[in-house]
Length: 222
Image (spheres, rainbow, N blue to C red):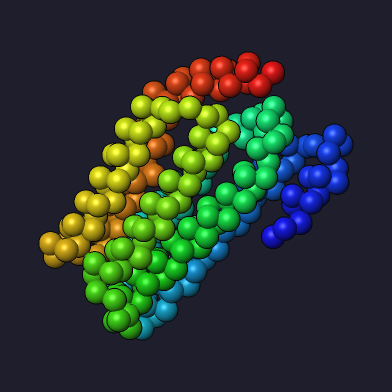
């Protein structure tokens, strides 16, 4: 845990390949997300083997795949390599910040496992607890990705604040639906919409907004 700061001091002024670093972290994100998908499919396979296919099992599978793609998409929105190259001093907080990102991805996969156990009838969690086991790590993941964006780009952004509020509303709504007696699997589908808020926001409007912010930041750093 303490090695990176010492390495930065030891190699100060030496070659720094920001694109390589960004690629390594991106690949670890993909691996972590892939492990979550594999675990969810394995858990659901056990359920299907013993109980056969059900609407709940299908919805959990769809939710797991949908969450995975949504979480993957929002991570790669920002051109990290370009920003790191211009701001080498941000490498250490950027690297350590990923501990939270990786942890939340793994926790989301664990939540999907809990959902499979709930369907199988082997979970001590109720519907609300099962939904929370997915909603909380998804919230932490999305929040940590936005914090990495703020770290690299800086400044306050009303558009991103709006997206965060809408994302929180989706997650709170999913938990509220579970508390109201709506099927746990349906609530997981609602959680899948959380990363979709950011994806749609960036693809429809945010990409221009982000491009302008990046241009200003890179101009300042340059």
